[in-house]
Length: 253
Length: 253
DNA sequence: TCTTGCAGGATTGTTCAACAATCCCTACGC
DNA sequence: GCGTAGGGATTGTTGAACAATCCTGCAAGA
Image: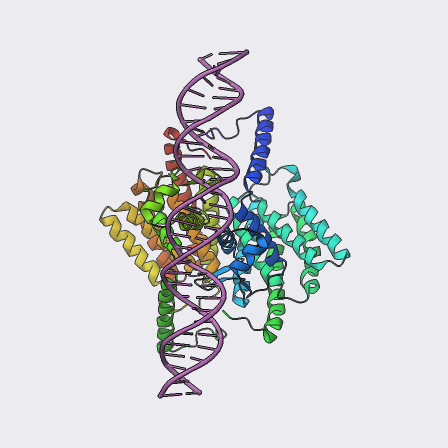
C-alpha cells in the first residue's frame, strides 16, 4: 500500500486526487449529527459575542430553542467544551469561559511556537510545495482589505484569523490544524471583551500582506522573524486593551 | 499576585504548595462523574493494550461491564474521542484508531516543536524557577532506571513518558499540558503495535538522565539541542519498528 | 463465477420521561 | 450578625422506546 512512496503515474495521482475529493464529500455528509448541528449554532453564538463570557447556558432553555433533547444538547456541550468554548462546572452547568491576562499570554506563547515553526519549516520542503498552495492566504488578505474598506472590523478580524489558520494549514499536519482551531476559537473569545476592534485589527492587515509576499518570495527565514515580532505585538495590543476593560469589569477565575 | 516574581519566604512557598495540593484534591473529588470514571477505565484499557488498535467498542457490551447507562457511556466515548484515543464512525460505532507512519511523523513533529521550545524558554525565566522544580523529572529518571533493572520495559516506557510530561509542565502552560497529554496518549497507542519494548525504551533511560543533568546545570541551550536530536532518534526508532510490523499486518486508515 | 437486489437481524442515533444528587437562596433561630 | 435547615431549581444518570443505518446471508440473474 504505502510502502513504495510515490509510485503513481500522472493518471494514478489524478485518480487519487479525485478519490480524495469524494472522500471529503462523504465525510461532510456524515457530519450531519444533531449534536454537531446544535454545536455549530452555539459555536457561532459564542464566537460572535451573542453569549458573553461568564454566561451560563441553561439546558432546559436551550433544548426548547434548539429543538433537541437534553442528551443531545449535552453532547453538543461536550464538543464545545473540548474546543475551549465552554467550561463545565460539575452540578452547576456550562458557562462561557472568562479568560484573563494569563490566558492571553498562554495562548500567544503557543501561537508563536506553532506558527513560527510552520513558516520556518517551509524552507525544508519548499520544492514539494504545489504551486497554488498560497492561494488561500492571498484570498484572506484581500478579504481583510475589502472588509476594512467597508468599515466592517469584526469581518477583518475573521479574515485575519483565517489567514493564520491557512498559514498553519501549510504544514499538512492534522493535529496542528486541530490545535490551531482551538487556540483561535479561544482567541475569538477574547476579542469580544474588547471595545475597539479597529485599533486591534487594522495594523495587521498590511502585515499579513507583507507576510504573504515574503512567503511568495520564499524568504522563509525573514517571514518567520517577522511573524514572531508580529505575534508579540499583537499580544501586547490585546493585553493593553484587555487591561483597560479589566479595570471597570474585573473577571474572576 | 504574580508581579513580584519570587517574593515568598520558605514558609510562604510551603503554604502555597499545601494550598495547591488541597486544590488538586478538591478537583479530584469534583471529577467524580460517571462518564469520566468510565472514561478512566477505558483509557487505561486502551493505553495498556488490552484494547488493540482497530477494535470496536460495543455499546451494549460495555454498558454491562462498566455498569453505566448507554447515554453515559457515549459521553465517555466522546471524552476519549477528543483525546484521540477513540474514533467515531457514524452509524458504525467507536473504534480504537490505527495510526500509520504519517501519524508518527506528525506526532513527533509536534513533540519536537513543543518540548524543544519549553526547554529553550527556560533560559529566559531561569531566576523565577523555584528550587525543587526539577524534582519530578529526577523521580521519573530513577523510576525508569529501577524498572529497567527489574526488566519491566512497559513500565520504563511509562516512566519515560512521565519525564516528558513533567518536562512540558515546567512551562506552566495549561494548554501545553493538555496538548502534550493528548500527544502522549496517541503515542502510547503506537507502542503496543511494537513487539520489542526493550530496544525501544532502553536507550532513552540514560538520555533522560543526561537531559536532567543538563537542566540542573542550567545548560538550557545544549539541553534543547540534545532533546531535538533525541526526539529525531526516537522517531526513527518507532518508524523502523513500525514498518517491520506493518509488513505482516498492514493497517489501513 | 461474479454481480445485483432484497429481506432480516443487529447496532447505532436520538428522544423522552423520570428519579437521584447537588447547588443556590432564603428564612429561621440563636 | 452568624450559622443552619429547608425549599426550589438545576444538573447527573438511568432505562426504555423508536427511527435510521449498517452488516450478513441468500437468492436471482447475467
